[in-house]
View 1 (cartoon, rainbow, N blue to C red):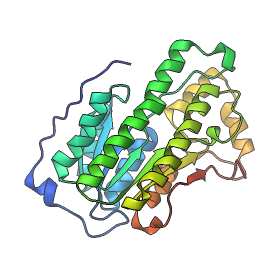
View 2: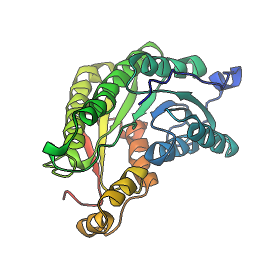
View 3: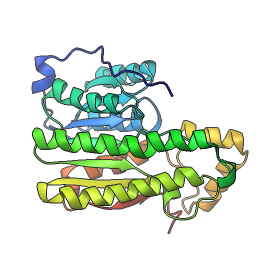
View 4: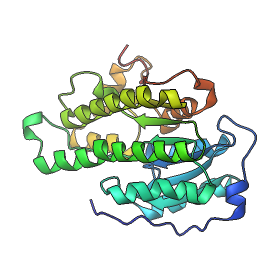
Length: 274
């Protein structure tokens, strides 16, 4: 992964800082979303904007970010984007700071960005893949959470953070052992942060999606044909989730309607782990 510098070609305006929709689940909130160029992150950006939030989309691929940002604006939402590499600490901090620069505050953050690891037994994982996954899926999340807590504390005062984990973190994961281990560590960081920052009114939760139709699962299907059929058969609802369904859970946890929920890892898996 290239350590892309954090940039944003969208200039802030007085309207960006002042506009605060009064309707919707996230009305009046400023939300920061990583991995927002595609999949669950893009679905979340669209949903959060529809629910009244002013959003800042972050990822590494500008063309994807620009397309989703323009889509949100065309629908009447307020959105900007920033290039961000979760493996680069300066890039992560600058991206979070950009939300405050644009909108004057930070209320909510969805740490969705992650990198996939080639499926296979633990002894076949490459050290380079492990190191890269650690830098993005765990260290990058830690960096983002620390920056988000600081920004929420300095501006909104209280707020909420949601980390995107996986049901693969909730038990043995022989096909994706590195990915599952790092997501389990993220669950622990989530719980520790909830206990640490709860007294300040900052809630921290995670969601654990089951099989979801994203590029990652399509890549897995290419590597191991039949995976989608097998996962569907293992799911009581007998279907794979759409990214929008996962985003709905994140939106609820970031909203005031979940005001007494913190430190949880919420399964959104169609009953797979029931």
